[in-house]
Image 1 (cartoon, rainbow, N blue to C red):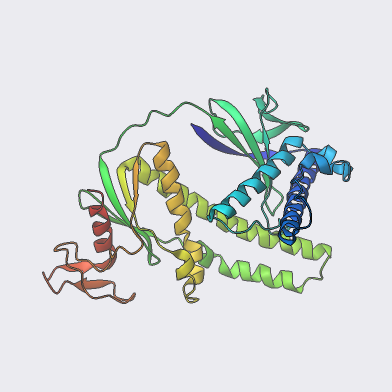
Image 2: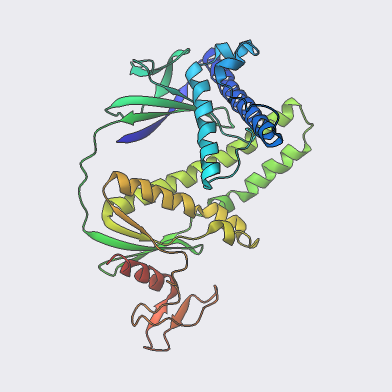
Length: 363
């Protein structure tokens, strides 16, 4: 079983400079490979002679000597990532590969472990071409290191994600089942097989920090482009957004792990966030709530710990069906939070009723 462990890196100034250069080289190689792949496709469409073979990262080194300073495996992985992107495009599961941007794209590179080139000793992790780097190993692991991905945040912090091949974990089965209805008023409403319901408050993290974010954005907009003060203002804004993202991750990880620990079968509502965000009145709230990430975490944690995750069909009318008699009533407006079934006179809380209907899919 492959499992990833993420830690904070504390490189020296010289090591940080090397990591930044390597990230830049990987982005450069990816873009050059993509540029040449597009040129080859255009030549093939025009019928200009025999089709050229796609280049390799090594073929660029004579033209761009600075690439020799970077980890060759990192450059090779950039090509593999591009190949994967094209494979998804041709399979119809992804869009056409896009060029990586220094400002917008994730700053990272991946290298592989070959005969101990990546290992941990005395509170440091060894990486190819850079040596031992201090890091915070807040949790140990057992297994064989397969690869490592070094990433840098917009605030200049470095992290390393170590992919480990380890034995399957012995998981302890749980007895409970739970239905989870997702929403904006409450982040989640959960009902278990004992018919005990719980409402999880929506933390509204972006809303709570919105005033500080807007203040930082206004300060950035007033600074002169290219000035030191603008860079300081950019860093302050990045820190604001980073704090919100970290708070959101903490909330989602703790809640998803708790649900997986307590329940053997989990039924969760699936919502089309992209379509719902077309409504500009709630777009910011939907982006802040991160339903997709929550379901993603539930999915991989369920796989790790031997749980069964059932994703309800997006068109399943969990809100409209009476959980007492099973009759589907008229479509209800979003502001209707409580209602009475016209068939059996059962009185329902909208969200609790939906979570009970989702729970029934576990049987």
